[in-house]
Length: 343
Image 1 (tube, helix red, strand yellow):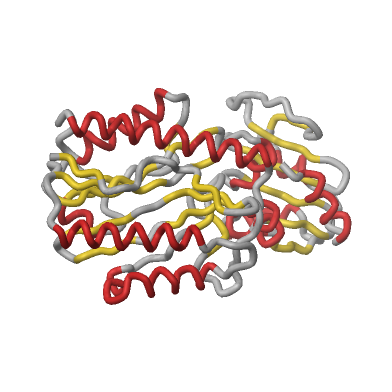
Image 2 (tube, rainbow, N blue to C red):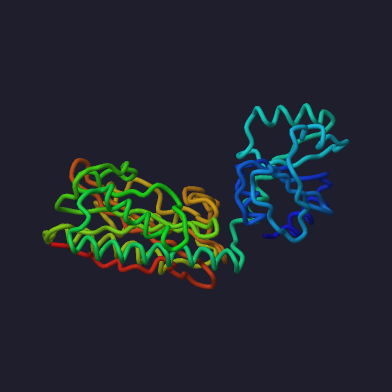
């Protein structure tokens, strides 16, 4: 992914090489693989991937692959004077070790450049993300069927079912599944437990990972018969979410969308206690960062739109979609969002 663009920037800025150390997701970005332990060295003219003998040997175009030896420090030693690193994914201990290996070198943080490369998805990335979202939706539909038959009675049982459905489709979990029933739904990041599913709102927040690319979807179900006030609150939240998606246009600040949702929620906006969304790709949470004043909608970005309202000690509601912005917004998580009530 965009290896040549990276090498062009390195050459332009007179950087000897970019050094990446696992578990930096940038290694996965350039290789489309995950490794138990790896190091990647990208120079203006070539790229090297060092992995352990325990990992599967990948076939990569324009990347030389070799074994990461026990004496890797000596293998790397060179008269390099300018080295780029990804500071957010490099420990202080590792950086100090690199400074000893390259005592004459200056180190430059390349996280901003790597972010710019990754924030706009390629056609392959968009395909993988769409696939992850489709897998997620199929798992959700299967779970609804089981819930309607009263075959899943606890948060953990529902989570386990969803996770197995994802695995059955040759995918992995993007993140720990959140199932929050009753009062637990008032906690945005509730830890799924062996709690019995109770009457009321049930938040289902989960996602599949396909070829390392993540989906993130939240649906809110009602167990039992909802009261008119509960239906009204759900419809208001759904309208706010749909409005935010419909207003997505290139260069629009994400904070402006956040303000629009809060305006639609009115007095309930005080119950909306988290960000409207986040970027998604190789990582579940990655740029664009919605809370940043500089963050704006760009072509080929993928992100979530997920307003929620939470009533402490009572219940909560959240509706979340993974959305790709090409020339216009495209919802990738297409599972039903109308309020589903299961008697």
